[in-house]
Image (cartoon, rainbow, N blue to C red; front, side, top):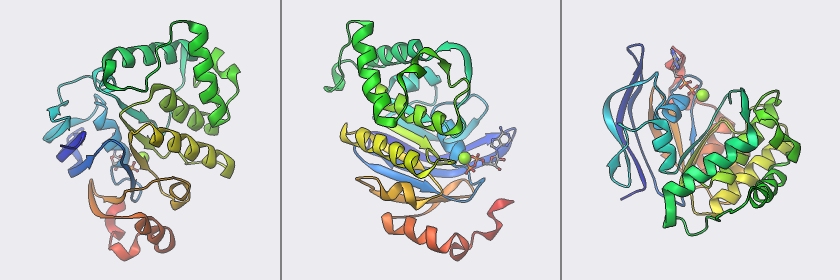
Length: 260
Ligand code: ADP
Ligand code: MG
């Protein structure tokens, strides 16, 4: 049984169907990419997975280790080790970054318990800060970010680095990263890919949503590449498929009318 199973999911917003039979299985340790034209429902899939309240599920299932999570809130899904790196991270004034990270980490550790053997237990705030600093270094963010409010005043690139840094700190079972490379300069794309590679080493399952083959080339592992159109996966392949999309676009797939 795969760790995460998404079966024939139909999801709507304001009675408009956005996901129309979306199915995907992710095993821990696997790395998947989802590509596809704008508006095909990639972010909707990511949001629905974590239980965004604006979307209603009309049919289908999302199972974690064989059990439905559709009735669970976002915090409960996160405590099962699901992580979402946002396409557009929100600035949350008043929530201290360091405080947020420590509470999230502790909640997840409590929930996953002994299940993840490589989870450190931090007894003191100082120990935790040292751990976070190592992860900040890895993505090229200065430790001063820890004393700021969550994402407040971060540049676009800093927000993206910060999302993957949170992922590294939390060590989820499955991470979905929604366009972690969009708007980044080349060094930042390398840093983000490096962070993804570090998470791969922990044995997590990872889904990278992207428009570009470039970030995928930096990954140490890529098991499947999926093309999404009109709310579902219409084609899957290996790394070659991402290169083919980069050189040929979507035209050859007959998707010209997907922007409607
Ligand atoms: P992608 O990430 O592949 O570009 P999205 O999942 O963001 O696509 O969007 C898929 C479709 O759902 C688009 O047509 C978009 O306009 C619509 N959609 C997404 N969120 C909302 C919303 N909050 N209200 C209305 N329509 C939405
Ligand atoms: Mg999107």
